[in-house]
Length: 62
Image (tube, rainbow, N blue to C red; front, side, top):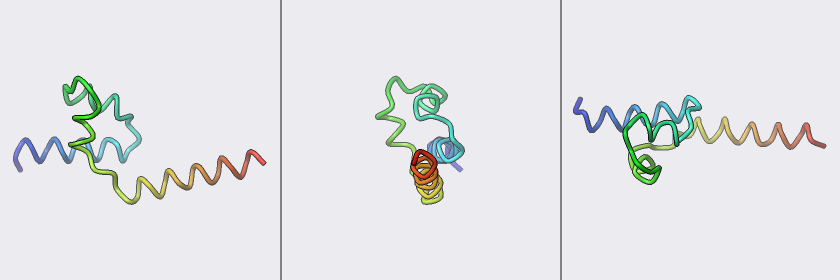
């Protein structure tokens, strides 16, 4: 595994585990989150989890 691939993998898994993009950017030494967005991929499971949270929050606010 190259360091480039490792950085992509780290960014993707950190975001998937709930770490904010701002924190991931600092961990990778980025000066802005635009570069971090280039490195990280949003996993389907992350989208599903976050959609479930929105649905739950909406349900409980009624």
